[in-house]
Amino acid sequence: MAKDYMLTRPSRSGPRALLLLLAAVLVAAGAGGWVLWGRDDAPPEGSPTEGAAAPVGAQAPAPAPSHAAPPPTSLPAKPVTLARPPDPLQTVESVEVASLIPAPPGSEEAALIAAAATQARSGNAGAAGTTGGPGGEVAQAPAVASGPAPAQSSPAARAALDLARQLMEKQQYVEARTGLAAAYRSGGFSPADAAEARRTLEQLAEFTIFSPSVHVDDPLAVRHIFLPGQHLEGKSGLVRQMELRVPSQVLLQINRLRSGDGFQAGKPYKLLRGPFHAVVHKSEYALDLYLRDVFVKRYRICIGAPASPTPEGAFRLVLGGKTLKTAYYPPTGSSIQGSVLYPGEAEYPLDPEGHNIKLEGLPGSATTLQAEDGYAIHGTNDPGSIGQAKSLGCIRMKADDIKELYGRLYEYWSTVTIRP
Image (cartoon, rainbow, N blue to C red):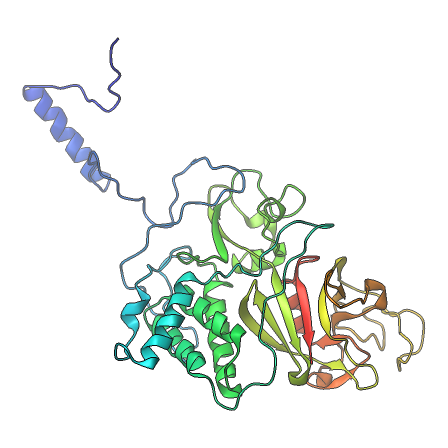
C-alpha cells in the first residue's frame, strides 16, 4: 500500500529549480515574513485566524504573552501606577511571585509574605461559585470576616498589602488582586489599611475586570471569539449557555459597546464569570460589591431609620425583581400621601429612572423575609440622605450608583448579605 506523505514536497534539480526557489523566496519576503517548516510560533497576539471554527460557547485560545514592556497608562495610581497592555485583549506574562520577596530568608516577615504569595498563586476566585439553577441550589455569598476592625493591622494583613504593591510594580495584576482580595475577606486590617486595601482593589478591578483587557490566568474573565449569529441574551444567548451569571449590560460596558448588535463575528471580546454579590455594612453606611469573592467597589448608602430598621441577614435577588420605572406604593408610615406614584410625578421617591432591586431571604439561611415584604435596594430623590438612617427599611443609593449596581447584580444568583 502506498504511503501518503502529506508534508513531503517534490524534489527539483537544475537551473529551473533554482529560479523557482529564488522566486518563492522573493514572494515570501515581499509578504513580510519567511515560511519555515517545523516552526511552532503562535500567531500575532490579538489577531485570531480568519474563519477559524470554534464550538458555541467555547473559550478562545489565550494570546501568547508579550515580553515587550507595555507603554505607561494615564490611570490614577495609588499606590502604584498600572501599566496598560499594548493590545486591548493582550495580557502580561506571569512571573514567580517568590522572587519578589525582599525580606531576609527565615524571618517572620518572609514567612508571612511567602504565605500571601502562595495565596496569590493558588487562590480560587471562584470559591463563591454557583451550581444548579432556579429551583435548585443558589450561589453562595462570599465569606467575609465580620466584627470590629482592629486598631492595628495584623502582620499577615500588612504583608498582603505590601506584596500587592510589589506585584503591581511587576505588572502582575491578577496575582496582586487575588492575594489582596483573600486578605481583605479574612479581615485583620485597621480602618486606615482597610481603606487603602479597598482603594487598591478598586483600581485593580477597573484595570483587570471593567476594562476590555483579558489577563493571563484570570479566573474571572474569558476571551471569546463570537461566531455568526451568537448573541448575549435569551435562552440561547451566551450569558445562559456559558453560565456567566452577569447581566449583558456589564458585558457591553466593558467591551465599550452600546448594544448587543455591536458584537462582530470572528472578533474576540471579553466576558466575565459571575455572579456579583453585595455585602452591606449598616454601621458604615456602605455596600461592598464583589465579583464572586473578589472585592471590586464600595458604595455609600442610606439605611432604615431606628423606627424602621433595615433587616439583617442573607438575601438574594428575586427572580424578575429588577425593575425600571418602578411604580411606588407608599407603605404604612410613609410621609407621602396618595395611591401610586410613577417616575416624573411630584414626590416620586426613587431616582428618575426608577431603579428597584427586590430582595428575598436566601434559602437555607435564617432569613425568612419574602419578596412580598417589600424590601429592596433602590435609587432616591434625596441624595442628602446617603450616609444616614432615614429610610423605611430599604437601602437607598444615589442615582449613578444604583444604575451601576443594577447593571451588575444578576437575578436569583446574586446575593446580598446585610450586617450590623
